[in-house]
Length: 457
View (cartoon, rainbow, N blue to C red):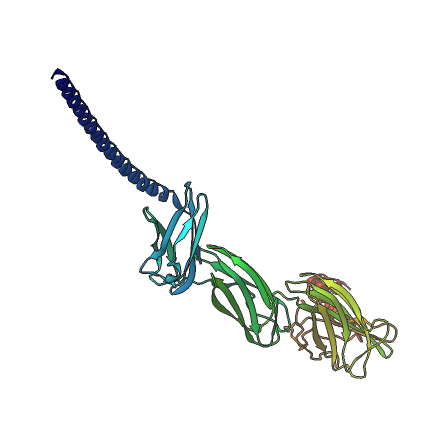
């Protein structure tokens, strides 16, 4: 009996121990499940936080806007470069530019997802059209990230209708036929951004312009440049300077017109013929005189000769004076033959500093001692003449400048006085009259004394 009780008690204890172990195993399993659930939740939270942190490392590293300043309704491009400064790849989607003023062309091209690796970059280029108003506004670049926050970046958009300015800043007051003149065209870019491929083309009828085309290239914002041209007109006309340039890839142009008015060159050399003397020897004649340059520019290579009906001959058919500076003069001597002295053209030719030829003809009338003359392009000048010896068997005649006008002379080079009857003999009547007057005064003064002498006798 005691043995049965003992066995029963042993079995009961085993049952109790088995129940306790089962309870312990169930508690341990429950605790493990709870721990596993907590670990899973923590892992999910950590993954989300990491994705957000990684997306924050994707930033805009470069922005390029072309053109820098838009004309209203002008096309251009906006290029945005992103850099991933994190350690894992980030997915990017739906890049876009948000603005009522900026219109993106073919926005659907960016519908696919793009991944940017750690330390790498990705670039988005948008073709856009920009509307008014003028001034500065801001568009917003945005791109979504996989598992993170989107990236936003403001883009400044500048719109201006100010064109490139073209102004003629230097030109002569009037142009001379076939004479070179300097003209300066100034280009000024008043915009805040540069323009490219600037080309100036000169066009006109009856005029030569050098250079015909000038390539400027780029002209930065708020900058200016000068372009020099040489204009040689052959008639009154207009020269049009056409300026073409590009703002981004958009073509623009501006024109400026230069009227060519033909007139006297105020800076040209002005030869003046003075102190002309004619001497004769047999059938030949010599003309000597001075040429003064009354102009502003120097006269180069001055040569003097005579024209028809006179024929250059003898020792000096042509006389080369050389250069005559402004306000300076040079002498000459020209020999010739002529059967008619009523018209003797004196031809003066010279060159300017550009090597262009000029000539001036002054016509002498030597037909009488009070003869008249005329000159081409010369102001009238008269002067009293003096007799000159014409050499053996000859006579001389002087044509002067700057003296007192003779009462009977119409010649622009001065009156003519003949060498015949000249000299001190022409003053004999005046001398005799003066002696008679002096003797009369002396007799009148001494009349009482003479009367007394005569009475004593």
